[in-house]
Every structure is written in C-alpha cells, then in structure tokens.
Length: 236
Image (cartoon, rainbow, N blue to C red; front, side, top):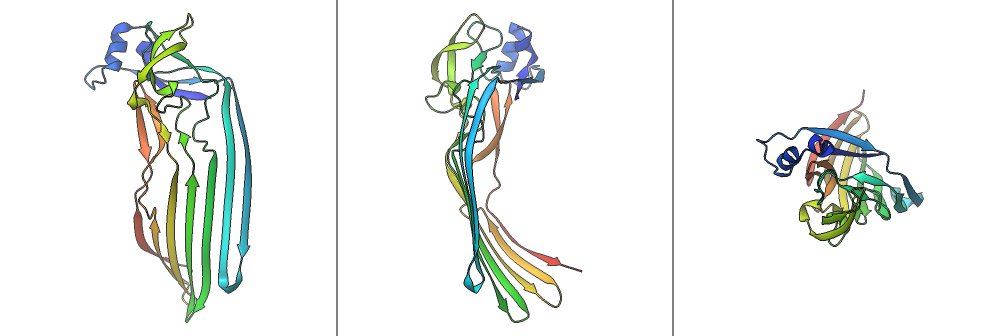
C-alpha cells in the first residue's frame, strides 16, 4: 500500500487550484486528501543473525545483524510532489526502486557488565546501532536519481518518461550513520532503589527518520538530539 497527501485540484485537473498548491503560499487555498494506492509487486529478501554471550567477571555481549535486499517489481503511483508537463496528475513508475526505510545493513551491538559492590551491584552498558544508507520514500530521491528530478515529458497515460535537472527539495536519501548510547547504574539491594545515569546519542548524530509527503513538499522528522540525565527507580 502506497499513501500520499495530494491536492484535490490535481485529481480534478483544476489548473487554478494546481497553481495555488504549487505556489506554497499559506494564504492560498489548497485542499488535500490522502490517496492510498496498491503499488503492484515488491520483493523483500533478507537474513538476520542474533547472538549473545555471558562472559566471565559479569561481562555480557550481544549483537544483531540484518541484511536486506528490497525492490519494487512493478507499480505506477501518483506523485503529488511534482507537476506534470502536460497538466493534471503526474504518474511515476516505481519499478526497480528500493522500498523505503530498508537499509541494506543494520547492525546492533551491546556490551555491558554487572558486578557486586558494597550494598548492592553496579552495571554499565555501551550500545551502538549502525544503518547503511536508505531512502525515506518509495520515489528514491537522491542526487542523479529520477525520483529527485524535474519531469519534462510523460506518455499518454501521464507516466513520467523524461527528466530534467535535480530538485533538491525532493532528496530523501539518508546517508549511513551510527548511534552510540551509554548507561551506568547502581542497585541498592536492601532498599530496592536503583539509580541510573545515561547519555543517548553520544555523538549528537542528526538525520531524518521519516517524511510526510504534502502537495509539492516533503516534511521531515528528525531523530532526538544528544540527551543525558539521571533517573531513580524504587521497587515495592
């Protein structure tokens, strides 16, 4: 299922309404509707490996490796982000595009230790998450890719057949990244009180995690910035 937010004017072949939507002026009317379409056929193949070990001195290590290969085998959908050179609603063929949010490599690693101290126990953990590059939309918008280019010609069915220069506003590829999190904790055995300190996203890595396609635009949501703090838990 493919879902996009598209201006009603594009579906109704209303030139004036289309111009209002493409102007990106909040003072001009541009009513929208969510359009759901079946994309045809797709393929998602992958392998996942999980492993965990408990070592001496309270050490433990765990990891997950996911390898994916995804592709649209067929499917023509509406692209409300770009205008059609012939007017009306632009259609694009997703064949051979990657499915969104499916990096080829995902790796999770976790190393920690728990050891006794006077009155209770302490523990620490270091976790890392790596993801290779991925696309946020089915259009696969990246420099040099048709999904990020101006459409210059369509066929009789309105499907894009020729492309012009890149439109940077259509880029949706996220480069590979690594997230690193740290944590340390102390548990007081008699009182059942636990105190933890943590730092999430240690390197302050910033990247888009999802996008909403509005008429002519893409609105991105980004991951949380570096956060740190202390928390306490009491068990009764």
